[in-house]
Image (cartoon, helix red, strand yellow):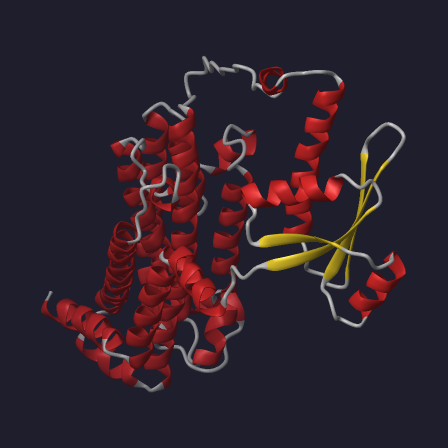
Length: 419
């Protein structure tokens, strides 16, 4: 075991000390804190740059009454917007907009049925905020005018917009509460991205590390002093542990960032990611499926990496593995809206899809215990068989040199390992 731990330590420490690892970790942690505090940053930038400065809206009002009502609405809800009645014609204001002397203008009128007719003119292709605010204000004015026509009081108008009382009772044995379902959906979505990027990044790192040692002929020296099986699993566990440590670091940084950026506003960012209604068993399943999926793909990556002798060939060799995790991601994403789909039930027991698909079902449905346990058992057996088969391929693959001819080299590696 001494040789195993030496290789394990070398794989872990060497990668941890590289500039790329340190810089990537620092950038990601900074990005996490930036994302958690983005609302505060926007407020500071607006205060510095004058993002809340007053905006003047030129209005042509043929009705003679709407401009004052619109100004009153903005004084209550949008004090940064000032409405100014224009004495120019529509053609004159149109020319000013084209010459970029003003940003926009609004034309107001009332038709025969006393319905507001509004026309907003601008040159900006991304001007969406102000028109939306104008439309909301005019809709309120329209409601008030129609209420006056019908001699309705304020209380009577409010009763027109009262929401109905609607409750949903789901008697399905696999159903969860709305809060549990929403937070489970967030947790599943987060885990999907974590597994996806972890597999893509760290599995590629394992395969590249093996190919690098082969290309430098270091592998021949290592294999003479330690068995290929020990070398393979030491690499998988060494770089795998480094990846887990980095992910844990990101998790701690994210937790601290959310706590320091937490607001008292109900339903805010911190409430969204609080997971307060998530069952602790669901969190346990998240950890289990992540670890099993992570090491399943890491073992496969080491197997494939042993077949190439040039780092340039690594991405081509691990492409089938990458496609597997992409398909798993697509399957899980398609089930976020309806996790009871038939094909999800089937694919949740396929080991290369189970880390994402089965956890999707566990997180969003109350499944019988035997289903996730059976999926976990299938994954454990698959990891064992893949490790056993991978060791046979690895034993001969690390001694193979020359251009790789894709997965056909597996048979050659097994035959070379027997010799």
